[in-house]
Amino acid sequence: MNKFVYKLFQRVNYSNSGRRSFCLTSARHVEETKDVAEAPTVLVEKDSHITLIGLNREQKRNSIDAATAQKLGEAISQFEADDSSPVGVLYGIGGSFCAGYDLEELEAEADRGSLNFLLRHEGSVGPTRRHPRKPIVCGISGFCVASGLELALLCDLRVMEDTAVLGFFNRRLGVPISDGGTVRLAAAVGYSNAVDIIETGRRVYAREALRIGLVNRIVATGTALGQAVNLAFSIAKFPMGSLMHDRNAVLENANAYNRPGFYAGTYNEVMNVTSEMVTDMQDGVRRFKSSEEKGPKTDSWHIKEKSIPDWEKAEIELEKQFKNT
Image (cartoon, rainbow, N blue to C red):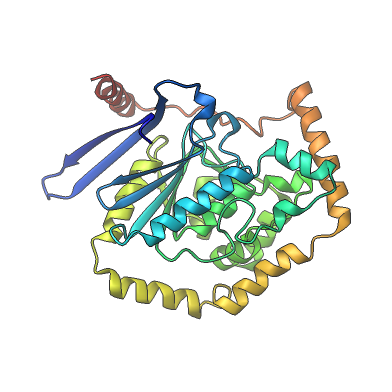
């Protein structure tokens, strides 16, 4: 990391009650000597004893290829082995959390008739086929779709910006869910809601996501990371021995999350993939690329701008001034 400068612009305020208010509105990776294309695809930093893990493929909406999946797995494993850090935060840099599996790599796999990306031991986009050994809070901004939603479901808690979008958009490409999404989604929102989201491949917006239990907090646009860090600090202040005991008991006692049930569920996701799905993936990728070249028929990849009240404009202006100092 000595060749790179990773700047976190943050403001820490203390209210009259003494409660710590943490606002982290922008995270930027600046390379000193090389092209930005060579920047690390996964950034790891610590704020005090909270580990921040950032997906850093902004030009691809933080979609994940094989190399990034491996680095993400290593980053989470290092966090789990760090005795000084009880809680982590997973987030995306550049306006979106994660758009799923990298389309170019998916196309190459489909053209070869290969499903190797589904057969990686820990998961195709990270260590999704096991439970993290420590709590992780997910900060969701922009698009959190396809395998990106499965990454978010890996986390204990999810903080979602009010203009962010969730959904299994891989439905339209013929790509199966393969990173624990069928198990974790049903456990989080119930069978009926899970089947609706999975079969339709539709968008899920913040208010619905909160109502059905898919996310835990809704926050203003641009504040997901800061609020996720706040939440991580609020968890880390407690004695961790009993907290981890209770957390692990929930994982063991919840039918969908206990080890035999969870591993059987994730195994079924992968092993029931058929050769017909490979053909569907090939056709789906071609259709998607064709629609991108012609121009999308809908606004499915665009987030509509939200009107901002005057007080929030003033807050944004203060953040800009702070960033330039």
